[in-house]
Length: 229
Image (cartoon, rainbow, N blue to C red; front, side):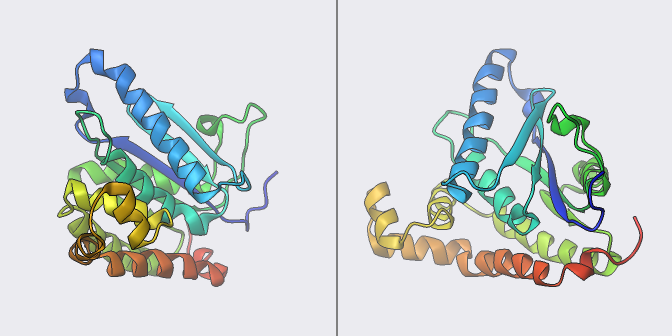
């Protein structure tokens, strides 16, 4: 039996317009997804400390458990950027729903799809509503007031992310991965001033504030336990 007061994050997502792809593209699609998942794991946990569990279903849907929930938003943003900056002909877009709450059941098999709990239900139910609302990112908790605040912040993120160019996504990905502007310039073969201008145009400071403020919420874990499921 899991501790119902321990918080987890569950990210449930799917690829946008993947049904339009040819069946011949499916193998490449899975390779891109697995590569993106591995990138995020290695970026956030290079020493293999925290374990992220990813599982793909129906070829274009995925779910994972973030055992340290304060990392869940960074995981989602990095994944969105990585999927959107692939070198393949098709860059992928995804929608993701983050559920914050307890996880009551972990199967002995270790399968994410067989696990259950509050965080899974929040994440799954919210994703079901996102396609009609044309939203790309949402966070759901047991606290209705907190959900309203997070919904508005995610709406600003969606608006900002919808304006990013391919180059801006690539630069943002490198910056959030921990590289300096000079290191990004060297890696991408661009000037430092170009990197600086691109980060400013992409709204990097606002994005970093969004990520930092979300992580800071977990200094007050009681706010996630308010309200009823």
